[in-house]
Image (cartoon, rainbow, N blue to C red; front, top):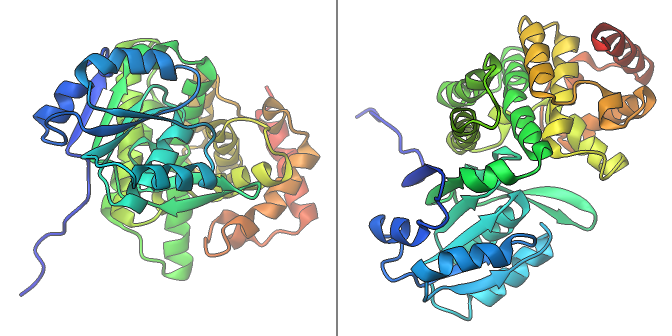
Amino acid sequence: MPLLARMVACPLSVDVGGGAVAALGTLLSDRRISSHGHVALVVGPGQGERIVGVVRPGLEHADIYPVEGGTLQAALALADALRTGSYDAVVGIGGGRTLDVAKYAASLTGLPMVAVAISLAHDGIASPVASLEHDGRKGSYGVHIPIAVVVDLDYVRASPAQHLRSGVGDVLSNLSALADWELASRERGERKDGLAAALARAGAESLLHRRDDTASDAFLTALAEALVLSGLAMAVAGSSRPCSGACHEISHAIDVLYPGTATHGEQVAVGALFASFVRGDEMLGALDAALRHYGVPRLPRELGLTDEQFTAAAVHAPSTRPERYTILEHGAMSEDEIRAQVHDFADAFDR
């Protein structure tokens, strides 16, 4: 008998709106995640004390676990601490680093994880991947997808503008990643998952032509939903493939060669525009216009990199994901050829 459908892991609940953090206890109870609030609250630095004060009235039985830094060591230490208690779930509240630490620790201890995002800087809020630093390098670790995702727009609106630009850049880079996936399918016979691609593309295209106020509830909700769709795309594909191509290879190379240059989303945005330029994509103009509208970096100099530094990153990029086939691997360009492409790219878009 043929398999008539497949099961796709996805959150039980996706709640986007103002005041979502304060209503966390109700959500956990209503969704039968934790009837009496016996959860581990993992909070990051900065707004941790304020957030604890907001959620404590509805979660009086919760234990608080402060974490700092998105490192593998922090996640392992948290997992050890979680094993000493008895919890219904792990609730991560904060930015991407805090959520990734909470996701990995929850997976190690076999606990469901609720992701409560107070910024929208990248697509990790609902993904089955935790990006953690170890020995000075970032690695990607497979985790269970969050059982629920909560995005509090009040906190998001108060977050630095750079975080929103980063989130937009990460979502829009899906267009370049998908083009690389199609290239790998065409040239190498790599299996391309149509459902995963549709989810990733839907998220990117939902922002591509928007021109409304980035502080509005409508825009922030669209961005949050697009980031969730990216996470679901990765869950469906079983890898980061639908959202990660040459754009992410270049970003990883920048992290290795020039750590602390910019946010992940800003770096992948420049990588996506460059990769799209090299491919000669039809959507190149629309991508450039969207990045320009949202104020997301488009060129190496807007990241604080020289053309020569960006060339070095593009040369190093394929080694960051040896198994991945993108326009960089397809072109098999020499360093001089990449340098020429970077020069032409800067000339074409430096206006």
